[in-house]
Amino acid sequence: MALDGPRTRPSEPPAADGPPFEGDQVLSCGRLLSRAWEQARDAVPAADPHALSCPHCREAAEGLAAVSAAARALRAETAPGLLALAARVMDIVRAEVRRGRLLPLSGPGRKPRIAESAAAKVLRRAADTVPGAWAATCRLVPVGAGTGVRVTMTLAAALDQPLPERVRQVRRTVLHSAGQDLGMAVTAVDIAVVDVLEPEPEPEPEPFRRPGLPDGRGT
Amino acid sequence: MFERTVPTPPEPGLPGRDLPDGLLAARAAEGDEDSFAVLVQRHGRPLLALARCMLGDPQDAEEAVQDAFVSAWRRLPEYRHGAEFRTWMHRITVNRCLTMRRHRPPPLPLDAVAERAAKDAWSQPARSAEQDAATAALSRALDGLDAGQRICWILREVQGLSYKEISHVTRSSEQTVRGRLFRARRSLQEAMSPWR
View 1 (cartoon, each protein chain N blue to C red):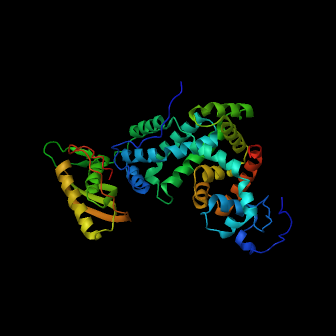
View 2: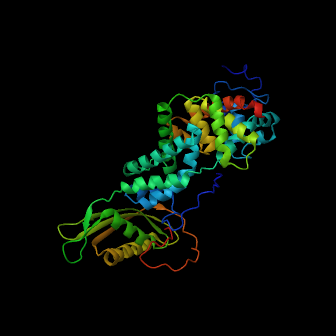
View 3: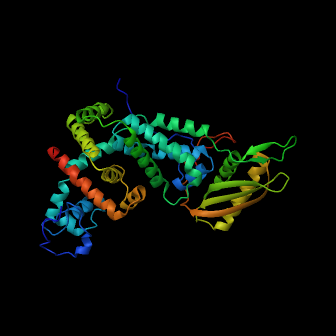
């Protein structure tokens, strides 16, 4: 299907409207119907003075009212199965957990070991306790034949204080946690800042939590 | 009989619940299930809405979204952050829905679709019978659209994605997206004309 005849009112440069789509038509104001709909449904309001004042564009937009109302109803539909769905997904995920390699701990006795994913979780959590720092990836690699482990971590950080100091703080905290919480002999912590985030707002006062449990702070 | 449904509350105490998607996806890629749980919670509802629109049937939709999340968990180690997690997840879900549509038995007769849509409506206590009928008509009209047009329309009007995001999800140009969206609107407008 072609346009409804040639443009009779080329008051706008044709390029502004882009190539017409099959079934498109020119409104009495010279605009394409497709453009009027895009303005009405997809553009920032008030971005286009013409669309605001033009009765033809408004009429075209109103033609979509019934579709839009039904779409709103679709958007508002509740999803009763969502919680159960999330639980099923996480059951499967936990059954397929990726533990990574086993890493040596430096404790006494017959060389205890810990899975990389478990150690990474603890070290990420330690990094997250530094205000304005959030751990992203955390890889651990054994060094040499002994019990040494090298940590490579990427961070997102806020810029409200110089990055070098923040990175030093994270390194100190990670080293401390590795020794204290895991009993792991970390030889080096390599840190790369890969993203910048806004500093978090002041946290709400929270009830006291026992140390060692997930603190629920979320960061 | 009438189950009361409430919006999913964010699970308190789940670590990382305020973190951006990219960070959570990076952690989940290394096997951190807690971070993945936050992503499931955050994106489950819109993806379920997407699958419901594409498949019509709530059970099929749940299955599609479950499969999509499990597939995402398995593929996260290879996920290279070329696209936002949300866009990536939409693509996986859309593809899953398309596969399910291809493999399922022939579509129900139209009355059955309308009846099913009306029956589903028990969970929308505030909606009038007329609204239910309009929504059922829209679902029917959507079902009759060409797949590409249907996907573009759902991603735009139900999911609120930008043209750019839709073009990433559907791997097509923004111009193609605009064309499909226009034709979808055109057909839906015609189908919905009795409700004007």
